[in-house]
Image (cartoon, rainbow, N blue to C red; front, side, top):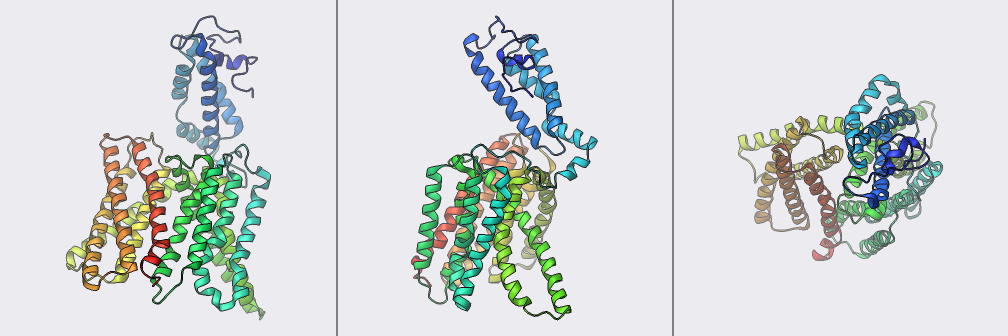
Length: 492
């Protein structure tokens, strides 16, 4: 296929501003820009064509031959519109509209060639590697190699330190034994690495590792538990800098990191379930034939594979984006009504029983975890929603879910206030209170933006930006709990 904008290719003569099918330059200036603007229009149009081609290539069921055929139709339509006197950009936009949306076109091809959807499950990259990134042939070896190193880094301290490593050491350091390898892999894959971003990432990891290992721990060690729970969240947000590369300063770019985390989590759950089944079968086989040493073998295999799977999931997300793009709407459509029913059931029970302040600590923790799951689902749902998509039933379902979560969050805050007045403050109570306040603000903003979309008063892009803002806010709060709470409460 010829390169768009090549003056020797008559099929792309519209990029030079010519309304004719031959590649001769036109003496008629553009009606809106004039002759001096033709090179810029040519470059912009070539860029738009390249973006359209790249997006179409990512759609399920589409092959390079299909994209080339559609591009020929598109260029033919553009030439006809140019002949009618339209500018190059106007002709291109109208031609794309006449050709149909990417989803509609890909759906038609998928219906005709349904077997292609199955072939996407083989190890074929869905998108080409970015310029300046790790070559595609080294992608899987790098992920496996770094995954093995991460697994060994997670397992070897136990061999050296023995049972003492299972205490404070892993609670403080497990995140530093795995996430650096993920950051290295993502930085190598990024085609737009940022020196300032990598400097921030390295400084964040180094300072966190130093503080966490210098901090003492005193009974009842609440702050140590809070650090172990919140530090991975803060550092996962920081690792997003390695993934985004030079785009890490852009708020909208963080939605890509949300998609990555959501898809990686799905892959990890699937791998963990499969690994659990295989482990159970192998264990039964070893016991059946009377072989010893299975505990020792599993003591190495399970932690190495558990840590290494993080890198494998990162590779799968980048390799099979187009597959996950079709799974995400299905998963969100399934779990949204389930979580909504759970929250509404809780509200009904609380109202019927009239017992709120007396709720047990374990109940509060459970529903706080459920609220976090709801926020994560909303983030993942918005990440899978195209900003230009029209209103749909799932948006109404999401609004009901968010409103129900808001009501539950307010009840949780009321119950926590009662416990604070009755039992006094503690690191756990203040951390939970702050988490619920952050969730309350985020859920309220999400409900407001969803309502604006459904009433056509706000653009969908505002909802996406609000979700993007949540990620760094959650990361900062998690960092405060992990690193500021311990000295604030005397490391108790």
